[in-house]
Image (cartoon, rainbow, N blue to C red; front, side, top):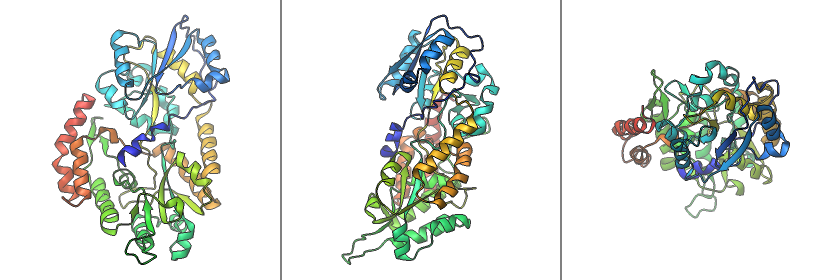
Length: 423
């Protein structure tokens, strides 16, 4: 499951295709015909070339723009090699949460705020703070303002089967949400009631939930992250916090004791609830299912509802960037929205129109998505040491209590984090 979720990285950074000439005025930058190379796992300039946007930027800034597309499994080493050789002075690197921390730990990235100033992020952080927060370590921000916002293609939503709700006489999740009662307790009661052996063969034919990834979905729905900034800005091991321990215990209850979880069956109509990434919703909306869509049920320590995002992308500069102000201006010209608020409003409305199956779902997400844009979490799974994962598995299987398991590996988890980040 953890690998499947991480593979969601196919949902690459959404292209912000309508940058503004007024916003991205050249500021007098003239790159003297130099070539900016955008290094990434996909061609981030492809769509902009077709629109003629790349040609405009090349003329305005007197530069050339090229793409260097690299395999995911070698991209970090190639980036570091370009840095060491000096070939990266005019690079822009497409980064994500699977390689960002590795690059920071190697001192390979330029702290953008230290060079361009904190004011550079003022407008963007009003609408997309999660990305800035995620690509920050020790008080430094390592991503340009041309970053991915939430929700993205890797964000997981929550779907439910209306027919099972009706057949089993269960509460309507929309009613619970609107009454402020869409929480773990009521959700669990519904899943237990829906899990049934319908044909009497001793094996359930109908289950409560599909794709239960406790470390991701249950943890984030209890208002926390696996790693959190400390007072000094350095990231701290958080697997032994009360929020996470409570989530692990609840997840164990659902998966191992109540046994309400299935690996498939939602699209066949045999599972009540299912976690669905944005890219999966395309199949769901054409499936003919009678389904609803809603944010995650809220854990007892959470301040509000959420969804899960395990992948996020952005643009960074190597630590030897020769003209960071000019290169940033070029990237903002290409990718930065003309008006961030309008961009997000239109994008949220498109998602609502595309995916919400009914008016009540649309109304809920019309209120929820703008808040998620600003406050959503990106779960930093990529910082997890093997010992920490093994402890989590032991807790889930009941070999140890969550507190015993996650406290025993706290030192190893923090040491791995410190070494990876060089903090």
